[in-house]
Image 1 (cartoon, rainbow, N blue to C red):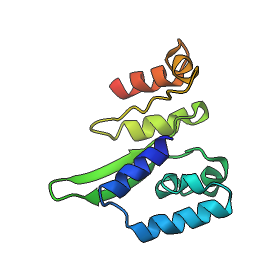
Image 2 (image 1 turned 90 degrees about the horizontal axis):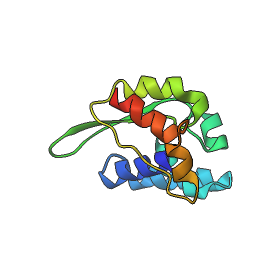
Image 3 (image 1 turned 30 degrees about the vertical axis):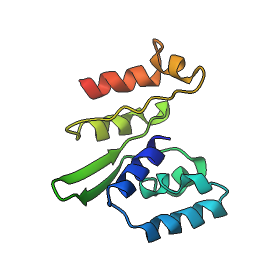
Image 4 (image 1 turned 120 degrees about the horizontal axis):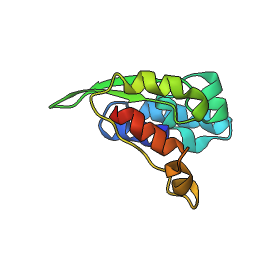
Length: 124
């Protein structure tokens, strides 16, 4: 959901056009992943699209009337923590997206949880 949320934010801010989103929606539907259309704004690798997870960091630049924005999408999966650190170390600020499903939040903030680890890494 992190890449989907980020891709949707980019779209809502005018950082990507509707036609491109429609193209991603069609391509994602062909793989049985129609709801991933916004994630595909940032998840470009074949493995990312097939597995439905972010593996490497992705950058997306766009302008608003007031700001130049560079979004860095970083992996959330434990296996790719080095890539997450690379992306986070380049950021001026961070948005921590937290799983709210039953048991997911608790697992994330537990002693060895990914949410806890990512928050600590982003802070330091």
